[in-house]
Amino acid sequence: MAAEIAEQPEVWRRLLTDGAAAIAAASAQIVDRAPRFVLFVARGTSDHAALYAKYLVEINHGLPAGLVSPSTMTVYGARPDLRDVLYIAVSQSGGSPDLVRSVEVARQQGALTLSITNNAESPLAAAADIHVDVLAGAERSVAATKSYTAELLALYLLLERVRGGDGAEAAALPDLGARVLESDDLVHGVAQRYRFAQRLITTGRGYSYPTAREAALKLMETSYLSAQAFSGADLLHGPLATVDPQVPVLAIVPEGAGGQAMAPVLSRLAERNADVFGVGSAALLENLAGGIALPGGVPDALSPLLEILPLQQLAMHLAIARGENPDKPRGLYKVTETL
Image (cartoon, rainbow, N blue to C red; front, side, top):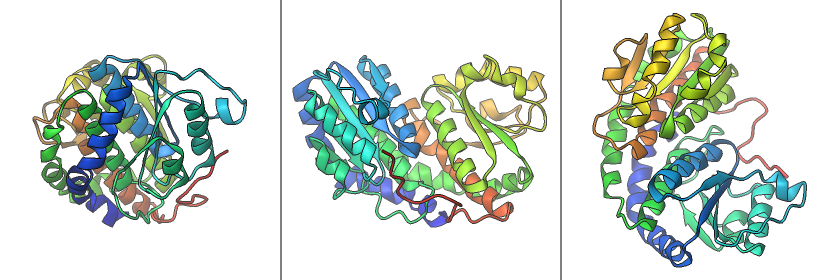
């Protein structure tokens, strides 16, 4: 897991160069079809990448977007009318039967189907009209890290091309990611602080909400603690009552609109004397129990690639501090096949 976390800046460089032609070709096909609605289907970590892309579509493209429940097609046999729909399946392995079947049904029902995987030879890649390989290379750790951020970057670059952009702002990401990963020693200390926690909350808004969800999943699957993710808005609608000084809160607060929208959430957490550790803007971290400051000037839509890096490190170090092996989570396998 440590090696694959460290590898991410190089994965991003590879995708920005070697993946450019495939992304350009895929975007051209999408532009030609001019979809009026975008649906995403995914599981686990890839579901958080899909949620991130949903924000991209709704904010930058002005199109409605949604997340599909595969069971409507695979368990209940639904056959919705999907004409004028772009149907995007996101999966690290491309091997889950329910995702493959949902793409097959979507294609039959008139959608333009696109798969984004880390395995160009997978059943999901074969099932879709278009495939984009995230080029993350073999991922041995059960807890996905580099494939997740590669999915984020592939989705960003693809959707930028669809709306006529060139994705040039992403060129700085590899160097910025390498800088963020230098905080590993600091994160190690944070893990020692939270090693005896039994419950933990993660929170963020906008583009950072998928980061909160992915961080919670990483903590659950490596450290076996109960980690719940809430959007900052939803946290104030009831779950705030569960927060006390013994329940650590990980808050993602980048310098853009999403981070600014977290300011009232941080105030309410302070009223409850919550132990809040933040990742994001140095200015927004000032009054928290601690935090990792991210480089400034990063566009909102690209911040999630950097935000998740120290949280991946935290999941790994926390698991080790608790006497667990983050490379071999109990009861989990690299490919989870759901029907």
